[in-house]
Amino acid sequence: MAKPKKTPRPRAQTPKGFRDYFGTEVTARNDMLQTIAGVYHRYGFDALESAGVETVEALGKFLPDVDRPNEGVFAWQEDAEVDRPGDWLALRYDLTAPLARVYAQHRNDLPLPYRRYAMGPVWRNEKPGPGRFRQFYQCDADTVGAASVAADAEICAMLADTLEAVGIPRGDYVIRVNNRKVLNGVLESMGLDDGDQRDAVLRTIDKFDKVGEAGVRELLGKGRLDASGAYIDGVGLSDAQAEPVVAFLTSKGDSADATLTNLNAAIGDSAIGAEGVNELSQIAALLEAQGYGPDRIEIDPSVVRGLGYYTGPVFEAELTFEILDEKGRKRQFGSVAGGGRYDDLVKRFTGQVVPATGVSIGVDRLLAALDAKGRLDTSAQGPVVVTVMDRDRMADYQAMVSELRQAGIRAEVYLGNPKNFGNQLKYADKRASPVAVIEGADEKAQGIVQIKDLILGAKIAENASLDEWKERPSQYAVPRAELVARVKAILDGQA
Image 1 (spheres, one colour):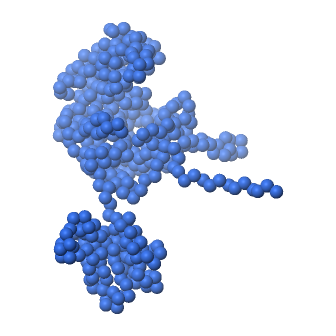
Image 2 (tube, helix red, strand yellow; image 1 turned 135 degrees about the vertical axis):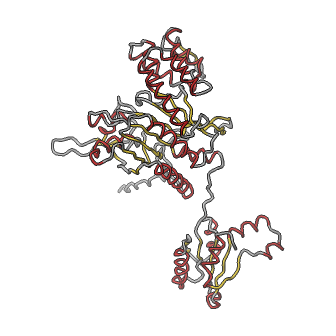
Image 3 (tube, rainbow, N blue to C red; image 1 turned 90 degrees about the vertical axis):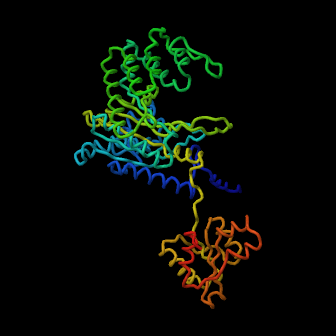
């Protein structure tokens, strides 16, 4: 008789493109989320927590690939109901699509304009890579129902305040602002009627940061050799046709006024282009009035975000300091946030144009930036550990922990096997505990407890001489009634 096959054990590993986060990482992220939420709240935005799952239909144009409606998201189909097929559902791809659905669904109960912020994980079913995960956190703030560019200027100012609040000082970041209408004006002045050719031009513009002016000229014309030696076919424009695009991309001047003058020249007679330049001028004036100069926020025509997505001003926050990549090469950290105006946000649901503008901050990118600059505190302090010398006296130890907790001190009783006391202290070290409390039978009889200052003990072990160690021991007895006060003094650095 054949032996039954054993069921293989599941592999203990995270799915590809995902990762686990532990203690200090979660704490650092939560602290950052609280800081960002504080700035958003100060600006008058209300919190919104929408569902983590949306219908694929609701995601609509916000999907990463509209030609493959279930690509790029984690989607599944519900069971059919009678003769009706089940709905396709998906984990949210970003926090913007849910806002569109929420506002359309609850618009009669919400104020107009509606100012909301949201933060939480989003999921993308895309190929993972170094530092690129399929689940990550975003922090969004949006104003729905405000057509004035004052709303766009406010988002930019709030973004600057947020970066500084989380620990990015002035000089280490810049927020760059452009306008999609200006780009539309440039394309209009070129007289391109071929939709495919226009799309090719847009894709080329998006490569400006990587290939520079010379590379863009080549790609707009016959083509160019890339770094690998492969030849990339160009759009096929003449030098004269390509000139407005190059003029647009290189129109940044020494001041906002100089940049706006250059942009006016680049758009020619385009009315939509002139409207875009005027909006940029208003934004610059509004920001200057609030004290946000070009050292923090600047007009930069090279910013091109989501070419098919935005309808007006666009902005991007870039960190300007250098870090070392995995090969030890210096490079700028790059973008950590972006956004802009998208006035077709709610129209898909209601048929009515509702203006909207917003920003999304990549929390994991910001945390990585602070870590790279040594500005992220990952030395979280563990709990006070009350050791167990007599398992029959667990009630006494729990009473100590209760007193410490009621005083606002993080504490726990050792719940492992208490037989080996050394293992208890090893556990406290592994938990980064600042203090261990010891009460054996002798201490109990004398009405005292032993306080072991683990922070001081570690310092003494590293640096102190024998005389210094004797003069300031890291373990000493205190009356049981003074337990909370003495532990609190150590934590406050007063012992």
